[in-house]
Image: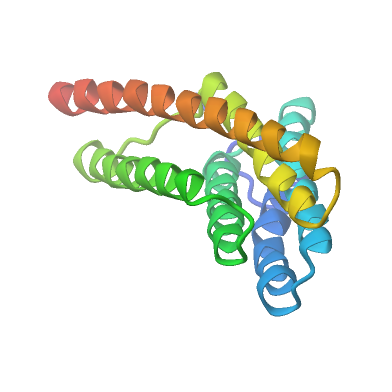
Amino acid sequence: MTRLGEKRILTLPNLISLARILGIPYFLWLLLDQGEVLRAAIVLIVVGTTDWIDGTLARALNQVTELGKALDPIADRLALVAAVLGGFLAGIVPLLILVALALRESVMAIAAAYLLKTTGGTLAVRPLGKTATALLYTSVPSFYLAGGDVAPAVLIPLAWLLGVVGLVLYFIVAVGYLAEIRDRVHQA
């Protein structure tokens, strides 16, 4: 049974998710072309904040859609990968964070594509994954702010703490997803 709103495309939450995706090139331009680390950090913080806003609005306005269910994690992944890769290229985000995130995202992209091809199914976002994303959305901008000379003595240790905890949670969620994919493929 389809709930009201699931088939709609043009909704406020979907527009917010799309705006998040469209903000990524602007963020990268600020960071890599203009060298505006603090302005890039602000854009990154806005993108991270709107991740929470679009989901909350979708539920509150009864505008949860299939498109939104797909756009939200895509926007999350694109923003996080752009922030970490761009930050690494700009000398702001440590290599360890980049490698760990790239490894996890690569494995999950391949596994999710395999699930889709094999069963036609997708993975639902998990609350622990949202927590991990929130921690990383706090960690990465903290590296940026510190890179822009905003309280580096406080923000660098905080960024490392939140980043490591967020990545550990990301890997825990990935193990759960991989087990779910295995079970669903065997049942198909």
